[in-house]
Image 1 (cartoon, helix red, strand yellow):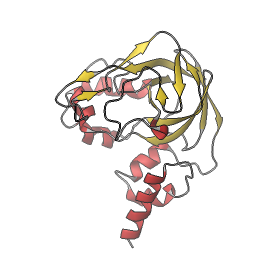
Image 2 (image 1 turned 135 degrees about the vertical axis):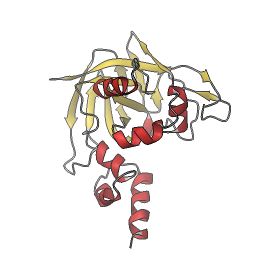
Image 3 (image 1 turned 90 degrees about the horizontal axis):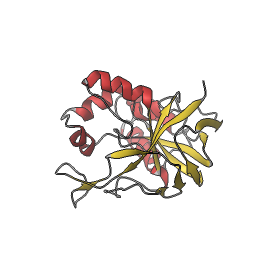
Image 4 (image 1 turned 90 degrees about the vertical axis):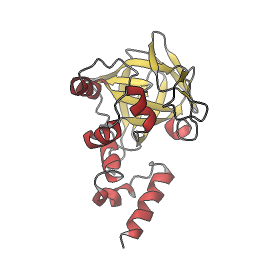
Length: 213
């Protein structure tokens, strides 16, 4: 089955005590839009980002989460989770995001995107959902979604196909990176093979491996 975009979501300004930005503003509350949206190297046009020290930038220009993984959480929590409820720009359908290989390229609409890293859950996410132990539960479930670079700028809209046009041979996946840095440190050596993984994560893996002796 061909993957597709179930929804494109843009963040609006949310002011709350749990917001990570020092000003108390967050862009985690993203809502679906009907028309195609411009995806730029530095992010999605019209998407509000509150705490730029930890969100946004070229390696995190777009965040994608799978509709199927969202359905698991909806059942687990006994609540509806609408598109954008994870703070994602792209809600996908029939795309194996956890199994996506670091550096693989997706043709989506007229944009070319590249998988870079998994999402790390934060207190803003837990506060937005009102689930105090969400970080622990999200980590244990290990379905983090993926950040993407924009290699070629373009427009993306709901219903657009998601086509994997290139996949690196190293095979290191979003799921492996997430587990290596959170649950399974024995996977850390694998991260050194993923050349397209952001330097900060690879350097962290090197430091941790050196500390292990």
